[in-house]
Image 1 (cartoon, rainbow, N blue to C red):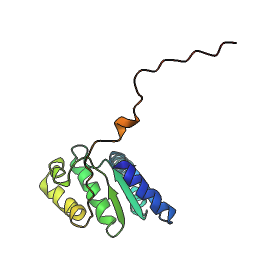
Image 2 (image 1 turned 90 degrees about the vertical axis):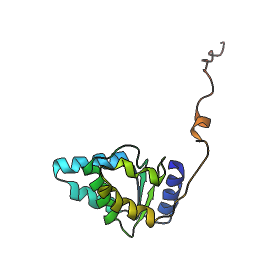
Image 3 (image 1 turned 45 degrees about the vertical axis):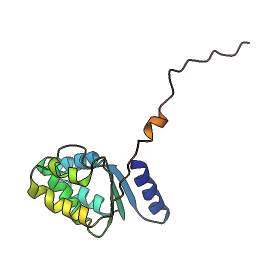
Image 4 (image 1 turned 90 degrees about the horizontal axis):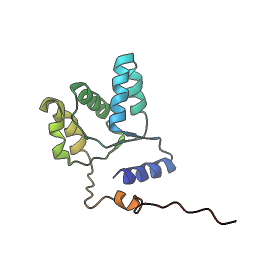
Length: 143
């Protein structure tokens, strides 16, 4: 899924779009830093600005109330702008990751009901990228 999102982002950039790709956990950490140093508004503007924002690995773990609020604000502010989300979970599995149904419903309603979902089933390509067996060092050529 990540690779497909990156390819779409690359194609958009080749057509002149401003694209930003980030892991969702990294975006949430940026927002947390913004709360701490009072730069949250600036950080939000930076994430709203791109023509296409790609959030990778969405819904990997339980969200705090602050993280859920930050995601809601981001999605709301980006309304009408392109957003790609990758996740290893089905959207129906996202609800329990939010602290309350009140926090989950408005965000997920915006995401799910106004999106095109591409579901990719099958094995990961990553096992094919692993090195095969132990490697033995080659001896230097005889001189």
